[in-house]
Amino acid sequence: MPAAVLSPLSSLALPGVWRGDAWAGSPGAVVASGHGALDAELPGGGWPTGELIDLLQPPAGWHEWRLLLPALRLVQRHGPLVLVGSPHPPHLAALAAQGVAPEGLWWVDTAGHNERLWAAEQVLRSGTAGAVLVWLPQARPEQLRRLHLAARAAVPSATEHAGPLLFALRAEATRQQASPAPLRLLLRSAAGGLQVQVFKRRGPPMDRPITLAAELPVLACLRHWPAPAAIPLVRPEPAHVVDRSVAVAA
Image 1 (cartoon, rainbow, N blue to C red):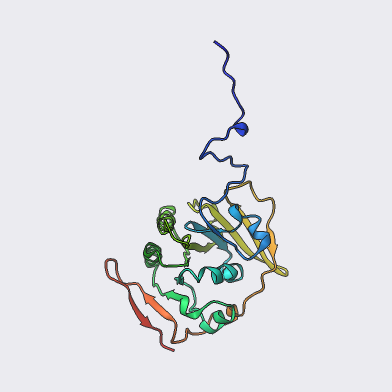
Image 2: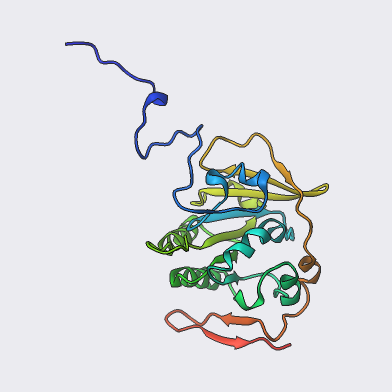
């Protein structure tokens, strides 16, 4: 009987097998980030839809708007932009100046951590959102996994819309904690722009952070202003009760 021949793993082309030192494309559609240097570092060339994306930053960083505005303008054509647990009320005039349509923006005001998780999951399961941003100062891996699975379940099977973008805004201190997110980034201020490090992705490790020429949007200067009366606000009720929309007082 001839001796068995062992082939190196690199020579095997097995479906569903991905080597950790090789690039793997996103399993679904992607949305261009609007930053060419960042797209070159993201599997598939953009933000993956229908998956959890972890964005970590120092306290009071407020870098998410600098990073995400180009993509959020794109996905609004497929569904509303939903903010869950934003530390400050969004300002419609400032967002409109950045190209975000006010009529396609929803702010979910939540009083606690569990409400944020519950509200974000309900929005995702509705299948109507273009993008969901949820601020989570604390979250266990199993809670993040529920959001990840809800985002995956929201991907339609036969429409042009490829599914929602889901971003979890979390503290830099959570970097060492386990997360089911297939894509994790660390955001920091840098001279002349925004420093971004992709420290988890379906691809080889990132050698060094990149600096994006992302200007500080005008809305960051207005984040402490009260929300105008026209913005739609949803206050989550206890579980098993349908959300009730109310207008925010000026």
